[in-house]
Amino acid sequence: MDDEWQWQRLGSCRGMDSAVFFHPDGERNPSRSRRTEKAKQVCHSCPVMNECRRFALASREPFGVWGGLGESERRAILERQDLTDGRGMAAAG
Image (cartoon, one colour):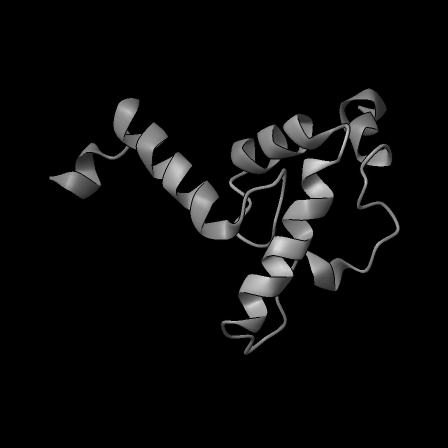
């Protein structure tokens, strides 16, 4: 099991304040946009960005910036996947 989580030890975000990646209650634009962009900059130079992104999508992580993707970006990817694999049929019908 430890090997499955090894990638997290290599993340550029390790040791950083989680407030960079997760919005505080009541945060609104433009503050939210600036924080999200700052988080994405960390992600885009991260050696495990793809592993992080896969984890967030597989676990359907609803909050924060993971693997360079914000909440709405991951939600859109998951919705497309759900439609493609038939899970979205009940919601669409």
